[in-house]
Length: 637
Ligand code: FUB
Ligand code: ZN
Image 1 (tube, rainbow, N blue to C red):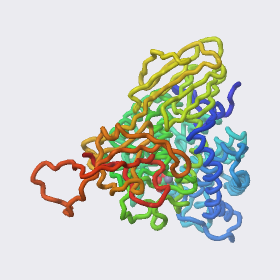
Image 2: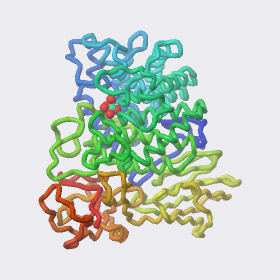
Image 3: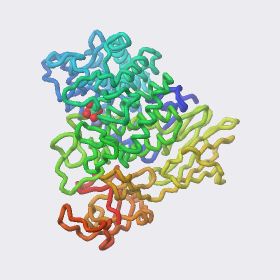
Image 4: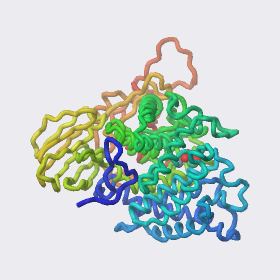
């Protein structure tokens, strides 16, 4: 069976090629549960919130100005519609199609068709006759091309997943305007918020119109030429402080940085420009070595939503925006396509199960915008993004970029599970799934990420040799492979186990990744968590919440061996079963009152006064019960 609907990224230009979206079906387990929750809870919730917040009304009032003033503060509120439409494109027509989805989809498209200007321009904020600003007047802050980027991604998804070209027509008209205005002979601008770059490349992939690729390339190449003028924010915020290839490190606003890098990776994929790949590999390596949280989160500062300096990774003030997590995965996926290297998927997976997943509540209807790694008992700032609101996740935001980003990302998770290279199937993420790559089709069964055993049954195989390539995550010190219960002597190379055989239907490949709990320390320059211990098991980072321990969590003391001896127990937690870790922790005596005691000798790390069994829960599930204190990093004894 030939699979036909390309996923979010369609390229055959890399080392590895994505599979079509309908070639991979998530059939069970955590990722499928997330997708179901997206359909049943998050999407209906998002549609209600979007209607309540007036996003569609902002378009509607362009047809009928008596409908009231522009709703919201920002010029990018159309993107929340676009991100939602992108998610809906995957879900319309599904067995459990989200309630209200079709109506919203039709209504939004009809409005967009009606309000698009004759020259193709489209933005409800700037088209507003009462707007204080004219189109293109404020390139640094106006977000007009960021808006177009999300429109294009929604349009491509609708065309690919539904065969519905209406949004694509709208997007192409706007994109053509941009090519005319800002192409090789046009104004040499770049948008203050990258996003347009990867979208324009995808539009090229979808339509074959090379101008779109050239435009994306121009936007990458023009950065760092001092194009952006903004009185309040520094050039770094916009990644305009240096040409992309010369950026010393990932810098500035986290989401902007990672979207830009993902777009540059797309440009590299289609043009073969190796100078871009060299820069991207360097920036990625530097980010992983110095700027990512243990959860995979990116962005250390609330101020300017910025990435921050190397090793500046405070726990309680981590920004780690949910959108930055999605952007990091988009970048990582393209790096994998470009190079075939497993290390990009290692980071992708860490981000997915931790920095990203924590952004959504277990019931699918509340969101973190910023994702701290510690919450103190007397925490006062209720949300890093906005004042007021609940102490934990919120149902929506005045700047609601993250929730609809989650909607679209959940809907397209299957696009990131597997890939192919010269007919070989690469499995990068483990989940219950059917993977159908044409003549060769397999089924994956696993309880991953709760358990490290993965069974892959061959459904269909041709008579000649086929290759299955399985990622062995970097955390897996021990990996065992069996074919029809016979151990193989294949060795892990660069994070991959490659199995070339003549397979027959019914053959079973079993990969066993040992998954003990492990203790992580941090680099000595990382002052915020130096000497502390974080707990992980498989791809999941764990944390401790106050309600699960009969001692103050600030007094808990861990040793690496206590972590290694953790008891992994599957039990009901919040909204289903989860593996929690029971760890014998020391409890320090209450500390002295002095904030800065005089040191007479080398201070002891802390010795336990007593012991307690502390239950650690997956970080992504924290904050789903009563608001209490939480820690990822604990003291070491
Ligand atoms: O500026 C648009 C979006 O709003 C950014 O990506 C988020 O960080 C938030 O600032
Ligand atoms: Zn966001």
